[in-house]
Amino acid sequence: MSKILHIFLFILSTYFLFGQPSENLKLPEPKRLIDRVEIFAGSNLSFNYGNMFVENYRDDYADNNYVTNKRLLKFDYLFGIGAYHSFTNRIGLNVRMQYEQKGSKNELNNPLNPVNDDTRQITKDEYTYSYFTINTSPTFYFGRKNRWMISFGAYYSKIKNLRGSSESYNTLDFQANKDSFEGRYFYHLREDGGMDGFAWMPHLTSIEDYDWGLITSIGYKIPFNQKHSTFIQLQDNFGLKNINKNNPYNLEEKNHSFSLIISYTYHLPPKSLRL
Image 1 (cartoon, rainbow, N blue to C red):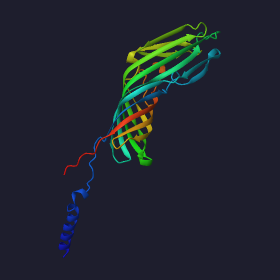
Image 2: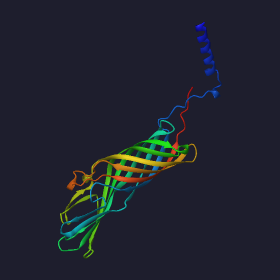
Image 3: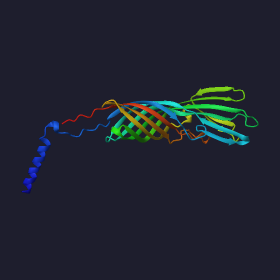
Image 4: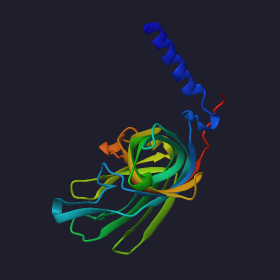
């Protein structure tokens, strides 16, 4: 009797599964490895850190002298392509390849002749580092219709180019000197605040070939329809590597920038199910 009951239940379950019309039978849609692709562009605002010549700084030196350094606003740009893989409707992975520029811009104010002389020397330096970068970020969606997103990940960059410019004058005769170059100057100050010397390292000899760090971001999605949408995103790129090669004068520098990114996203159609 038990065997007959098992056979009956098997035939009944088979009927309900395969005896249904095909339009009523729903099978899970197979996932794509990449379900969205994007192009993006934006702007970087740099806040490099690690030494007095790239950060806001003030200190008193011998003979009643003082030295100040003021960080100036430096805007650069970025652009690239990316891809998304969705694990669920709220969790995904975003990988981006981009070209970007970041760096530092500052104004140094120090005594020109520190002994019995009030003449000041003002030096403005700007450096632009161009990188090829790969970002990898797990992404989490929340809010109404999953419009909001946050992500946490890492970046890895290779230096492509380096450009610098320097402009200086003194408050005595306002004689100005201005130059642009590929490479960097590294300054050194004496105990009285006067500039004792500098290191000139041409082109890419002054900077490490690679940089890496952490990224965090928050964004908002604006859908147009099922296939097209755009993202507006704020991203913090926090470098963890000292980019100064050979560490001249023991001056460390690490990249740090905030990005405003606007992307266009195309949603790929689901994979067709072959029966």
